[in-house]
Amino acid sequence: MSALQVELVAADRMVWKGEASFVRARSTDGDLGIMPGHSPLLGVLVAGDVSFDGESGHQSVTIDSGFLSVDHDRVTIVAAQVDASGLTA
Amino acid sequence: MGAQQRIYRQKSRSVQSMKKITRAMELIATSRVSKARERVVQTTPYARAITRAVSAVATFSDVDHPLTLERENPAKAGMLVITSDRGLAGAYSANVLKRSEALRELLQDEGREVVPYLTGRKAEGYFRFRQRAFEESWTGFTDKPTYEVAKEIGDRLTADFIRGSEDGGVDEIHIVYTQFINMVTQEVQVVRLLPLEVVDAEEKASEEELFPLYEFEPDSSEVLDALLPQYVTSRIYNALLQAAASELAARQRAMKSATDNADELLKTYTRLANQARQAEITQEISEIVGGASALADAK
Image 1 (tube, rainbow over the protein chains, first blue to last red):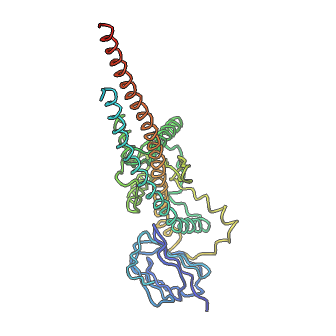
Image 2: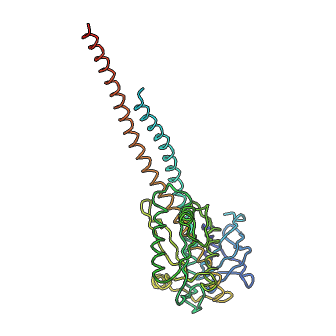
């Protein structure tokens, strides 16, 4: 199974970029779980945690509002502000 | 020491201390300009992601959004003028203000009333001195703008745009800012911010791969509702960062030429002081010789 190419982008910098097998984020309708092979999606995110299972294990960051786009296993999470204090690598 | 010599020494001392100041400012600007450029580069992924998303929504839905809708007979036009807080940056702020005057005339000729929004103390001072009204001004951050400031400006402009000219808002918004091209070239740009034109959509779609058929969560109009204000803010943020980099580059150049001029002046004053000293010596000698020969003649 291929992995997701994840980019986590804040307004003033690229926060994290890498591969993950699972991404979870909170959209306006509730929690969203993204796994490889997900259909193309453009969703609005509300303030909350975004977490992903990357090579270095489970990690999570806190964002304020933003959005998420998924296409061809490429996940882009865009937020104005990202609190990356929980990020290890 | 003669009076003339003393004057030249004084002048060259003051030029020397000014030179120290301008040299220091030049060095500071040089170190900051690279950081400012880096910040512009670091925001590119965000700008790209957001433009891409907006283009994608625009391609797959015919949703008319208030922010993209052209108004018939616009009566009022907002103008965001981005200048610096501090001077000593050559013609940087003057160029922006000159361009904003040209834009104002153009808009007025087309029958639109111009509502200025200002950033930077230089623009504020320019308007206050001429006792011209302005809608709002933001100051105190121009060499290091933050996203929060961009958001504040963006929210205000978007709100005024949505209200429309009938309710005391505006019908369109232009930005006058300085685009950073490289260390020696910065160009004043005028762009229309609102109503939005997502021009990139059609051009890019043909070059790159086509956008996949996105699902929207919750639905396309709400996604657009959330995206467009962020898009506006990211455009403003980018303009502020470009302007900051341009300001620092302009300051560095201005201070470099000031330092060079100070060097030139120092050389001139040293020469003049030497000349004055020499003239004084010559005069003293001729006085002594004249006095001696007068005494010899008297005997």
